[in-house]
Amino acid sequence: MNGNEFGRLFRFTTFGESHGEAMGCTVSGCPAGVEISEEEIQKELDRRKPGQSMITTSRGEPDEVSIKSGTLEGYTTGTPIGMVIQNKDARSGKYEPFITAPRPSHGDYTYSAKFGTRNWGGGGRSSARETVNWVAAGAVAKQVLRQSDHDVRVKAHVNQIGDIEATDVTWEEMLEHTEENEVRCADPEKAEQMREAIDRYQQEGDSIGGSVYFECRGVPRGLGAPRFDSFAARLGQAMFSIPATTAVEYGQGRTARETLGSERNEDWEFDDGTRDDVVSEEGDPVPIGNDHGGLQGGITTGEPIYGEVTWHAPVSIPKSQETVDWETGERKEAKVVGRHDPSLPPRAVPVVEAMLRVTVLDFLLLAGRINPDRLDDRPGEYDTDYHPESPQYDPDDAETAAKTLDDEGDGSDGGDADASGGDTDTNDGSDANADGGS
Image (cartoon, rainbow, N blue to C red; front, side, top):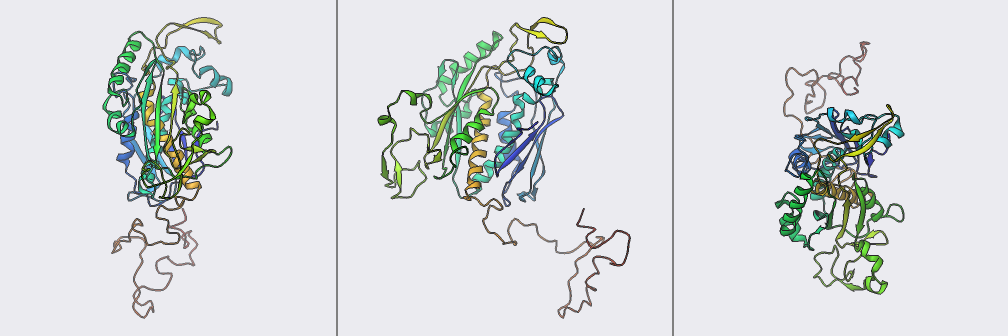
């Protein structure tokens, strides 16, 4: 099974099934010298985890992350970062009736048709639980971006549930209000209406769709490569990868089909120093307005990148539906009883933000705006603040020792050059590379 990796230079590869032993991901291409906090990763996972409110699944997963590789003394080493999140509350029994009787509108039948088998517990690999790995990778990207020379900031909020649409909000309002309510809508009045609607559908045994608005500021101009690696193309891939996504828009989105070219086209002016929302220098050409969503010709303009992602209603609902069992040849009633979200956007907000961050960071690395090897951009320099320090004294019981030679360098204090490596004439396998070549 391919399709488990995202990114070109900053890449993350994921593993795990919804009701398997664990979820996890490997992040490759993260520069060395980034101070990584496991607690910061956990904060992002806590925003996505199940059971955080009455309008999310009641599955009790703590989603505790454990970093297994790629860091030393709190800093990245430039090698792959391995992270694991254990599944603690998997209950597969409720999914047994659907092993050979696919649930309506799920990936059950298509996975079985593709592979001839599938992990059926909780949807297995097709479950949105797998996005816990994406949020972990995005949390790493967030720390890289914050410590880089680029002031990249990302925020998203739920702007619609069903037919309830939030009013347009400012960047500042998103920052202030999004996390104040369970719906994660930055319009407090509409958030309450959305919450009531989700409660109503949940009580009726149904579900409802919605959308998330996103915005990314501080992205420098010139990122993206025509044609198939344009920023818009990669952004679309990132968002359409999120389970249940049915539409992705940026800039004017769908309303562009109703807009005249003379209305949408943006004149140019010179930056007079008042455009705080644009990454530019005074005197640089900058567009007037931003109907293009920060992208022209598929390449970033330095203006805010913004858009919207739409999800259909969750397909796991307890209402009576109909399916067929290919093993018995019977028609069956399907009631998907279990622990499921009645609406996806509230928990999708941190997933959208994560995918934005990994996309932007990947482009920054590809363009050389961030050194892919090391965050400090000091190639060849080895004596760094984040390099591990040598112990002042070797312990007496160490198997090897690096002894200081005398001033004349005759080896009288430290022995000959082979003293710390053993007798080179022995044939017991203890050659000079024995303690470093495993």
